Image (cartoon, rainbow, N blue to C red; front, side, top):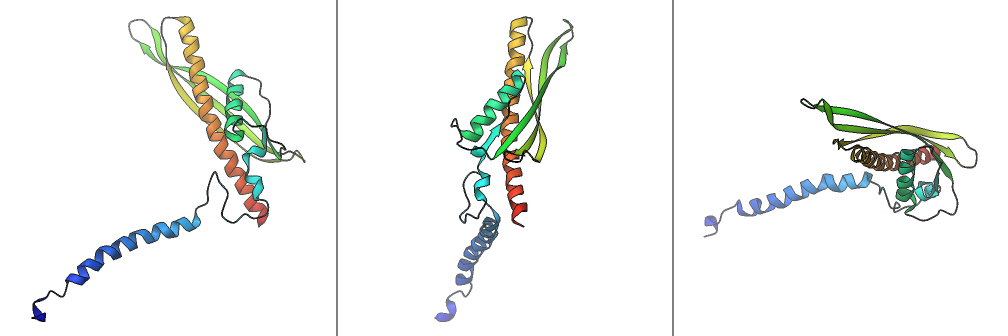
Length: 188
């Protein structure tokens, strides 16, 4: 009677379990190389406090769009709180330009446009005033035009604000990545 029992039954039950384990193994190994972007690592090493974006000040800017970028960047980095001590300073240069993108064939008037905001940043050590790193980020936002001049001006301003917020978010990630790289280079 024992010969009537299929021999492959235990083997087929084990195969799905092995497939699941084989699928999870790369994910478990990949987790070993990941580190949190916002939080702190499980093992805090000396100098890790330099990762804190709340210790970065943002210099003054000279344009309305630049002020939008600066304000949003400050909010993203400090969360509305004033830092006690600055260790780094970011200096921004923000420019924006408008481009008309399409035209209505009968009216010979533009019906859409885009605004591009470019931001160049330099990261300085607050004590030595030495430039550590820098870069450029940009974002584009579109808007619709009408026959009303005030509505057009407001549409351009709203597009500048949207593009400025996008640039500020890009700057935050770029500054954080630069600071992590600088700390990693200093440890080696």
